[in-house]
Image (cartoon, rainbow, N blue to C red; front, side, top):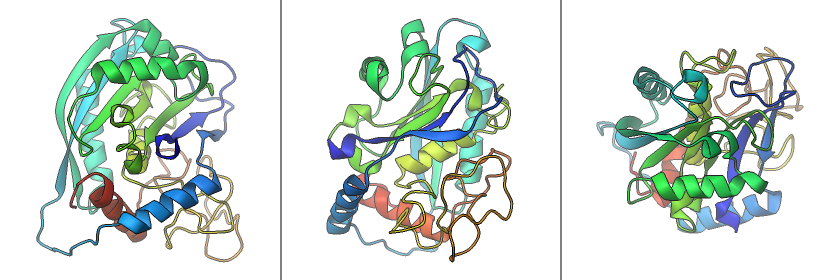
Length: 290
């Protein structure tokens, strides 16, 4: 169904291994909403949009996170990331979302040893049943304002080299159990995946969970990502190509944006327009007033 769609960020790596490494890959998305689906989603958003209230003295809305560590065994290479990296991930999120009116707190952590989930969880095809089992067994929180994060291995997932994926705010009403973010375990701060180990994969996916599309959504024409201050680009940028300008008019590509595909070291910002969209999306669909 329309709102059960997800966003998936992937690396096209030559072969699937337990601990993916960065070599000879380009960024890609394993699943995107069609233009028709996005148009319908945006029409629904326009029809139900909650008007934001301006309050300069309001505290940031605190979003609770339940972190589910999925591991194949007790070794770090089997997904058993330490509590220190989870704490660092929450700190990184709060740094990256500073100024958005939203903050994140760790409500709880659990660890599940399940090699089937660790190796096979993914958003589509033969991997989807593993995801359904995992989320049905582990999801916590009784409403749309609670964020569930699952860290896992994606070893056998399609596409190979998956970094993460997320549900959008409007998905919750159709399938609340599916709601949340799934990331590759070694993309956390201090993780073993070069160029993607500053926790910004989680930031990117949480951006989707809060209602943002990729900056390159729709390419050079049309409404793009439905944010007016993110210049159009096509395709998503890889590495950190300073000065890249893939679409005529509107400015150079937003390679420093968290919703692009650049290296973690290149990402550093959300735009004012993206912040406004996130606030509107979560007020409308998640009951979060930021």
